[in-house]
Length: 353
Ligand code: NAD
Ligand code: ZN
Image (tube, protein in one colour):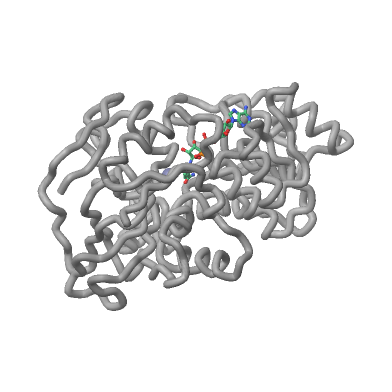
């Protein structure tokens, strides 16, 4: 097989590897649509470790099955499938009393490009096919579905972690693709005011389309002061962190009213600790503020549920796509777009047909 990945921290290249072996519960796909993620940039250029040596990157994919294991029940060769970026083995007892994202350790639910090769390849192995794959509906574009596999499930998870109730005021910090999906998820969960913090015109326009009621520019003064002014000094019920730096993260605590919830879905790749300033924390008692953060949910039922949301016309994650590339050979260019983040980029997609 051929794939594109990280040789060692900071060096990416094409690599040839033996074809993946399809176990009895596994499936092998060829890509139909792929997308690079900001997390691939973290993996290639900011993180390091033995798992990121000669590792094919990528975890967002819609594929066509070219092989299925002998014990796979619901899928056959030729099926077009939505492959969740979080695709656990589902066979660890820890799943029964914790989060499937962390089935046998912190990152173990996200196998692609962490413990096995990722989706930037001409052959993609999916473990536990019956538990992880969802059929691509005939009337859904593969490029739309690929936005469900990570961006939509992650952004929506931000809204879930924030435990939004009808009428809650919500601040979404960072409106790249993940934050935009957090705006859409918050709106669907019944938020009242949604303050979207961002500056890029295309992102701002899409944030409004997805349900943001107010736009706050972090380049025009303190976000804390702007949110406090907009909420008459009260703060918001929940803040979702989907971009920015540690200061942004700390400010999420600051803008939350006492009893509010901070939900983090951003990834801080190169930090060694969190150190929330006391003026944001809600005093030494933490002001009954709740903090939750984590990885996107995956698996078959999660994909089927999100597909149902899209098919009902409630949200169109395909609106995130701003750049379209074609074929395996365009993977390095697509990844480079995520590194450079030109101002008009929200999300690139690579199609194979
Ligand atoms: P992105 O870079 O496209 O978007 C982040 C946005 O934040 C950008 O538009 C940037 O301009 C903006 N920003 C920068 N400084 C800011 C500030 N001070 N205040 C507010 N906004 C600011 O990234 P993305 O693709 O949307 O991904 C966001 C994060 O989510 C990344 O760190 C990614 O690795 C992570 N991620 C996490 C999961 C998960 O499972 N938790 C899954 C996918 C991605
Ligand atoms: Zn990702």
